[in-house]
Image (tube, rainbow over all chains, first blue to last red; front, side):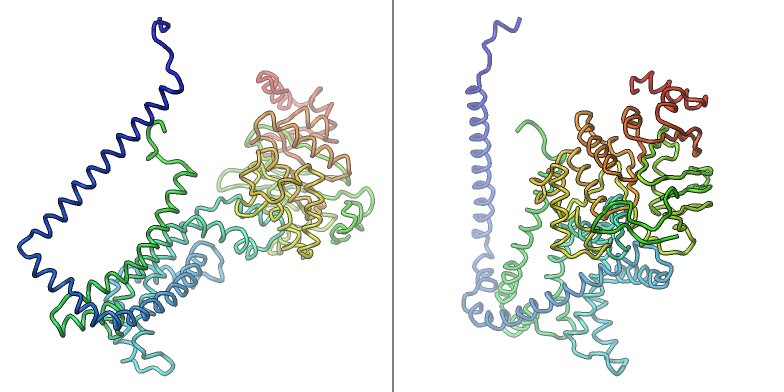
Amino acid sequence: MSTQYPLTTREDRARARRRRSRRHMAISGVSAVVVLGGLVARIVTASGWPAFRQTFLSAHWFGVSFGSILSGFWLDIRMFLIIEVCVLALALLIALIRTFDTPVLFPLKLICIVFVDVMRGIPTILLIYLFGFGIPTLNLKGLPTDQVVLGGAALALNYSAYVSEVFRAGLMSVHPGQGAAALSLGLTPAQALRTVIVPQAVRNVVPPLLNDFIALTKDVALVSIIGPQEAARVAQIFQDQDFNFTPLLAAAALYLCVTIPLIRIVDHLQWRRIREQGSALALGPR
Amino acid sequence: MSGSAPDRMTGHPGATGAPAGAPVLEVRGVTKSYGDTVVLKGIDLALGEHEAIALIGASGSGKSTLLRCIDLLEGIDDGDIFLDGEPITVPGANPVPFRRRLGLVFQSFNLFPHMRVIDNVTLGAIKAQKVGRAEAREEGLALLARFGLESRAREFPDRLSGGQQQRVAIARAMLTRPRVLLLDEVTSALDPELVGEVLDLIRELKDQGMTMILATHEMSFARDVADRVCFLEDGRIVEQGHPDQVLSAPREAATQRFLARLLHANRL
């Protein structure tokens, strides 16, 4: 008989919940202090620590190099923004051509398939070398010879291939009933794409798109291998001259200033999606 | 023969040059197959002005496919479909102008989730009929008000109940002033308590003279609203006639079997 037990009251349950959340906070607090504190203690007591501080964390060399690195970083940001816009446009175009069957576009479709396969199959760094040295050697009139432009073009094409696959997944995730509904209203196929299908496709892939943005912000530094003096390159030049690694850390810090906010945004969007749609990660009673 | 669309301002499906008594929509010998599966095996159907035809039959009998073929969302293999005497299934012809004269409402609503209710409703008028934004909006709000949905105009579709969503979908199709309204099992995806509000709305449209074809599993509704019931089985119209005759005194054995199954499932 259950009557021999007193009924659990609302207060009992609230108290148990509070107790559990206090315990969780205590455990995570203590373990954070222990783990992180231990790690820091281990590092600063290492025998090489004074030498490390001298070569990597020197205030003097930071002051000497930071201004130049910052202006190099400005080049990074401009390249990133321009490349990103090109990537978005080209990738969406490729995805649309590959997703929809139009006889007129068939040759283009074939070109797109080959393009995406090749671009995804070549290491980015090789592509930048090939563009940076190959195109000026061709000596074709009308083609740019500026290393920033050539390296940027290589990156843009490389990323377009990846991002077009993201867009393609987005386009395929839109329910076929959406297209049918748009057509039944009398919209032309182009209007249906523009107003109904593409907006939904893009919304569905915002988190993976932002992931590729983040990767691009860092890969812009690869363009420096063919010459342009962006942040990583400038830092490396300082390091070569002065045998001090502080400039590299300064450059890394600048990158983090851009990438960490982006990463946080992606994380937030993904969590919001999980909250809205539910996930197997949400185990147990809340 | 006239290809003129119904007059926008009256919006009443009487303002065309088609001779009185001539069918608004005529389906002649239409066949359709997907791969090896023949879905429509020669459909003949004529729909008169202000008439409502109910298509009944088991799932897979071809009701939805027929409606999708009429709206030119699917190509047909053989036969022809005429709208106001004009063939709309000419091979190679652009289907868009004909689709603009027809309205289709889907079983699963298919509202655009990224657009507010009012933008869903006005999209066809703005993009396809080239109505001005302000005018379309005004008409859309008036129509939503008529459908009892004016307070929902600024919401996104997923905030609405199924019955409300389907009424929005009907408003969306109606704002393009279709010559014929095609309704594809519009209550099949709804919870039972939400079916009534959608059926009431369709009955109202019928009373106002809308010409329509409705595929439905609601037999009492078919009897109530339709002027004629067509029973489809296996891609053919097996029997058609007045609702009372087809539903109460079916002549064909296939119709009798279908109705007996419904009766057994307590769905009649």
